[in-house]
Image (cartoon, rainbow, N blue to C red; front, side, top):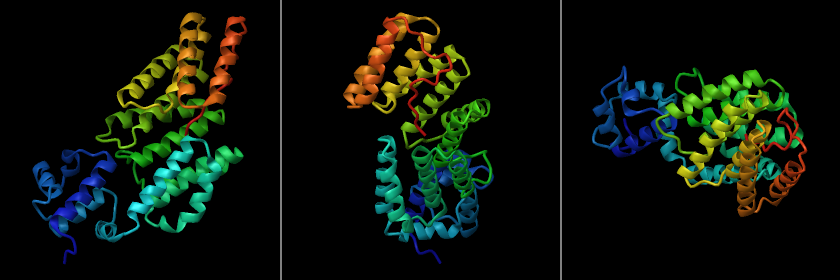
Length: 308
C-alpha cells in the first residue's frame, strides 16, 4: 500500500537520479522506457511495486528509503548543517567542522549522510593533525557506505574520490593520485548533473597541481586555464586566485616570466577581493623574488594552496 502519492514519489526519484548523475534514459535502461521515467518523475504515473524495486536498485537505495525520506522532518536542518560544514571547509576552519559534526552526528543515520560525515571528518582530521593513514581509512570507509561499483558514481562519491587522490598526492604517491584525478575528471564531465559547482573546479585545481609535481608544466597551465574558465562560467570565486597563482608558478618554471608576473598579479587581486590577505602577501613575496631573479623550487611544493 503506497503512503505517498505519485507526485511525491516522482520528486524523490528525480532527486535521486540527479544525485547519481543519471539521465532519464540511463535510469530507464533495462527497466522501462525513458517516457515512462518522465511520467513517473512528473507525477503523471505511479510505478508498480516491481518497477519501483528495480529503480531503487539502480539508484542504490532501499525501497524503504523512498518512503522514509519523505517522512524525515530533519532533512532541511541536515541540509543546512551540510551547507555550513562545506562553508567552514572552504574557509579552512576545521576545528569548527569537527565541533559541528560531533554535536550533530546523531542526525546522520542514512548511508549517504554517514558518508558525508566520514568525508568531512577525514579531511578535517587530515588538515588538523596531518594523519594520512587515519584520514585515508575514513575516506575508504565513507566510499564503501554507498559505492558498490564505480560505473555510476554519485556526486558525493566523486567528491570522496577527489579527496582520496589529493591525500595520495600529498603523501608522495603522485602517480597513483594522477590516475585517480584523471578518472574523476572524466566522470565529473560525463555526469548528467553536478549540483556542487565547486567540485569540477576543485578537481581541475588538484589535477593541475599534481601535474606540476610531475614536472608536466604545460599540462598544468592547460588545466589551470580550464579551471579559470569554469570560475568565469559559474561566476565563482572559489579557487580563482589559487588557479592563477598555480598557473603563474608553472609559467615561471618554464621561464615565461612576463606571463608568470601577469598571473601572479591576477591572483593578488582575487585574494585581496576575498580578503585572503595571507595568500595575497605570499604572492606579493613571490613577485618580489621573481623580480630579483630568485628561482622557485622546481619540485612545485613551495607555496601550494590545498583544497580537498
